[in-house]
Length: 363
Image 1 (cartoon, rainbow, N blue to C red):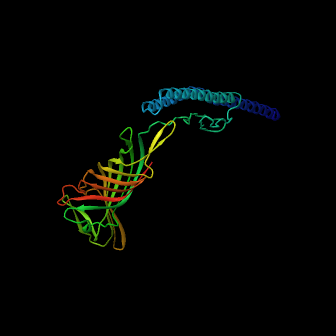
Image 2: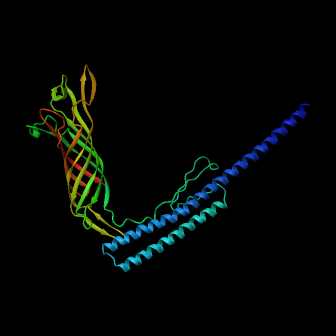
Image 3: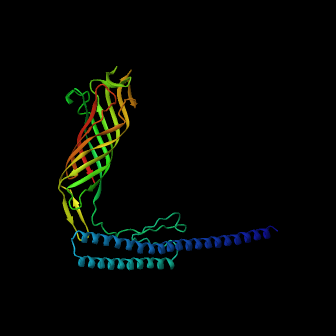
């Protein structure tokens, strides 16, 4: 009886194992088929996108040719010939790129899932999720054939500046300022666009954008700022200060009229103006908002080092506006900015922030 029972158990286990293995193999084959089918469908959709993309590129090239014709840089006959060449090139591009896609579809159709086809011969990339036998692949097309814009009137730069900062106080020379010259500084970080104003020359440009400005004042003579009934005054600190600094943070929107010579670079299908290694001047101003203020005090008390950060409560003007200008060679400039608004509002004596430093406009 025990022998018969063992045989029955072995038979049941064997049948179950075979059935499970068959089911897993069937599921795996189904997954592989589904995975390949997904890729094939994505590639078929890509064929439609390629045709639309090349037609859009042709449209842009024709617009550039028309601009050159309007500028009388080419004759009507030359323009017509250039349009025919552009149309011929785009038709050949469509034919070649679709042939690449058809080959990929054929390759996937005769191979199991997991066969690598992301050779990037048409700007594709694939993303895998899960194991090799359990994946889905997203495919997109690149724009390696996108034509250059014939005339780009607007460019953009990252703006970074730093240097010395202080305050001009009514009735006082800068040398009598209660703020240290060496220890007080500013930093600015922003983004700017530059647009050519006139069609035929790049001598005049409009530069505009947004910036964060940090203005810091290093207070002299063991003093610190105190709010006495909304009047901001400097008073002697009761113990020796290691550091007393006051900082404001502003979000501003600068606008400058920039002018100076530039070099015109002309190519077959586009042209550009370059101010690399050219002298330029920018004059303008800025307006924005104060978004924070803080006084930082460092000192020792009873042998303990104390860092005291006092945020807000200093009657700082919420609205910030001023004049600014730069004198540049290439991407590096001498930069000056001056706040027309007093640093503290409704005070008996006005203090206006002034900064001088180096500015970098990096495209």
